[in-house]
Length: 225
Image (tube, rainbow, N blue to C red; front, side):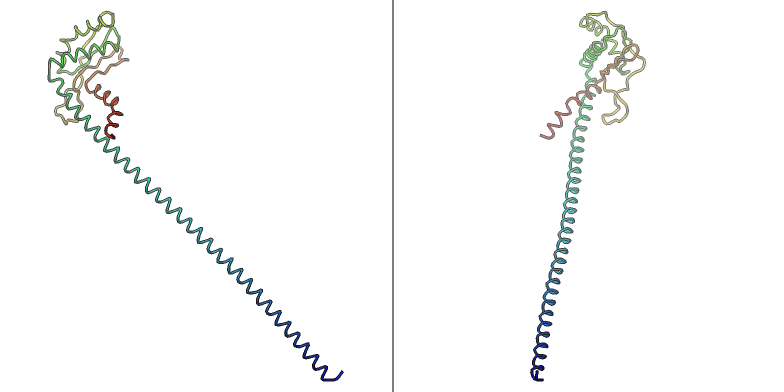
């Protein structure tokens, strides 16, 4: 084979090798770029996911804080409302307490009331021997109606008239002033069995407390209405 042919073949081989190398290099470059793009896309998606998760976490925290704040405000409003309602109820009770102070001022009416309270207490106790306690200022008034009260009780209960002893220990005196916070009694009586196990508290203050407890739901309903 002549030198020219050999040289031509060598050139062809070199060109072939060079072309193959270039094609291989291109393949490697394309593959590397694809891998880079895939990895870049994965990194971007991973970051997006982290951002979304962080946003959701913070959104939940904000929502929870809002709910907590709303609940606290609602509870504070309820407490204020209930306090205002209690203030009105207490004010009504204080007014009623001042009103019942005038009951004992009308001696005729109060005398009849004392007799009725004694009869009612005896009917509740149904005891043959009873201890009666009243205010010291009411002692004479109580003693003046006691016999009649015992007779009326005996007629109603169909029993013998009980033995009723007026206690030497008295109930607290009337309040010195309408706004007095000392222990006091607006009137009425307290009766107890001889052994002290059964007690019927029939003072005006006790009856007012009972009425208020019974009427409290209705009072609150009217206030709400």
